[in-house]
Length: 70
Image (cartoon, rainbow, N blue to C red; front, side, top):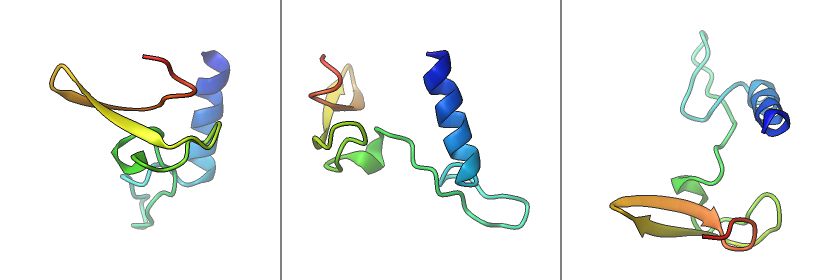
């Protein structure tokens, strides 16, 4: 978990933060959180399988059916 957390933070910094954030000069970040609502029907960044959405207990979860078993 440490390795992946560190990798995600480094990637986000390299891309100037999340697409939901702006820097002091108003420039938007380019990092996209996967999977998420913007990732539905997009290819999984690990295997290329399409990201699926499923409503679970009133909340929608986004996941790759190949990489993450539910």
